[in-house]
Length: 391
Image (cartoon, rainbow, N blue to C red; front, side):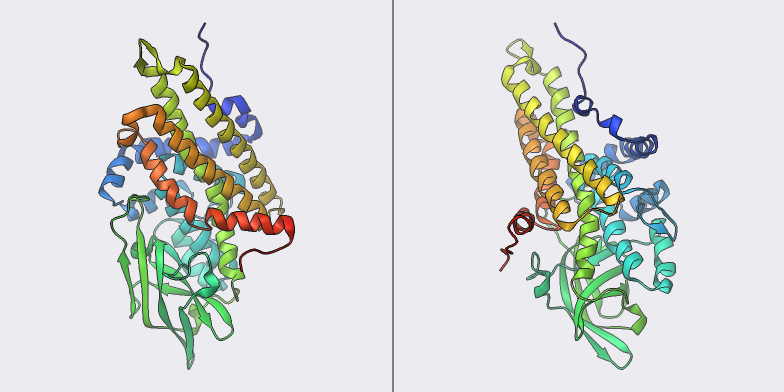
């Protein structure tokens, strides 16, 4: 006899692990996504374009831009609340969560953590409101997993700085009002705030993507870009600066990727219930139920780990190795769930009528950026053995 179906998270009692405020924030972001983002996302993905400024304003009004930062117009929520917001945004599309992550956890966090008081007051309130968009220029054409190999240079000329170099795969690049650019100076890697329109600073959008199409991805080119002395972030010296920002953003991915997985699984369960095969619902076949059960188990375990990491982050006990555990697990399992859900949907799974193939394509990028699966595996391996394996 059939019984009332349970949501995958109900099996794990996820809501019992959240405070009322955390549930309210989650539900508010989910409602906004269902109302204003989900109806358009397949079209944006197919067109390879998004209304970035309009979205930034809406997300700013929602309060999710830099939401885990304190002061300067930021809402100052917990890490867990931020993670839940990322989950709901990525349940719509990874590109939308990327916009929020890059804005809040990379560009804004860099200014909040390493900037001067003047820089914070100039940029953060406008960025929190979505009136200004930021990007984060670290990756280069020949320096992805190894940022220490960056070639972008910052040279002193009098009291000014002059920057030369190229950054690649930069989310929000061509629509950003300010770029946080990392460059090699005589005293180590330093961060600089480069406003849009600065002479010598140009951007080129990366075309022909089949992943993260609902996201702006750009190349940043700096040719004798002259900046005043106060454009430098005074609190960051060395790779610990940009890597600290990446750890902030990686936590958002730990939670966000599970949103994509949840959306795929919800779609597959609903499809299996409606689809009739051999005169019975697809959901009634043992192989289908095994797939759904296995995917639910991995999604739930990933969610429990993500919430645990969020609590550790809120209590100041998070470490880069713990974030690597979460990023590796969430993205790897989300990608496998998306692929399995595609098989449940059959041929319908490859169309944009359903979100599954879009999520699967996006997750291929999420698997790579902000630390590839291989890099996070080696971080964990090094923590376990005490022997670095990068070189």
